[in-house]
Image (cartoon, rainbow, N blue to C red; front, top):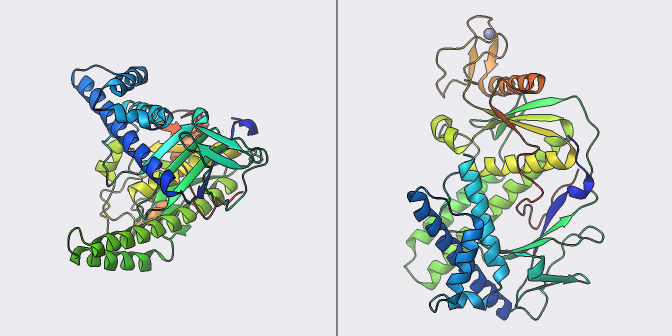
Length: 404
Ligand SMILES: [Zn+2]
């Protein structure tokens, strides 16, 4: 597999401070994006119930029709580009669903869903380091916390607002600085830990971010405070923002940690074998006591996959139909049962004593080896070719993505 530098696109995410007018325009746009997404999802869901499929082009035609109706005429007030984009996002969500990689798409809620709008090249102007969005007179006041690559031309721009009220803009650009690394002969298995974040087949255990505990305690406190406030009061709004701020901080730290970890794994190994925790398996196999949440795991995997793509490495996801924690990685004997509280165990056949998580990681590695050796054997998915993978969601907001 080869990756040419020209294909590599990276998201560069910055904070910005909109004028009141811009904030109003963007909030309106977020609302319209959500509306269009939900209506298209409803239309596709109705069709699905009749065992029909509605594709992107059909939803695009629907959008045109909606805009002509009186009650939806307000959709004309915002840029049409993010509305088209959200239909593409919905299409992608269905593609993932049909490929059994994701659950059925869900409706976007006003309160809980991420507020964002994506603009493709026809929806923005980027000139002399100034970014102006469609329907706006002034450029955005962006805090350029790190430079864009020399001569970078964004191919898409995503504006978002988090629950703490902060505004972000993410520019997807080609980065000529990213080049494949020399091929090395090392492979690692990575298992989801029970009380550690992740366990490697080398025996190394990776802990959760250090501050996580403290932050969690603060979060609990803030949530109790929120619960005590009166509904629709000023204090409630304040308390809600405080909760959102702590959430954002936890997510930022976690993302930082995952960036460092995935960069390291990709740099040190040619092939990384992970579990394929798709929706199908998740319900059945995942224990309640996992130290990594589904969301964090999905983020970890996506970072691993796009960085592998950038640097010419490979990620193999092994289906967890095989009993990785019950199987002796030394002699292949299957232990009868392996309750969750058992942290170390000794194989009855060969007498090897195993750390539960390390043993599971070693089994994953072995399964991955089988895949690379004969190209089959264990159901798996290799990263390259999985998707175009040039586009990733905007990671590493204010802190910047650690580079190799
Ligand atoms: Zn054994």
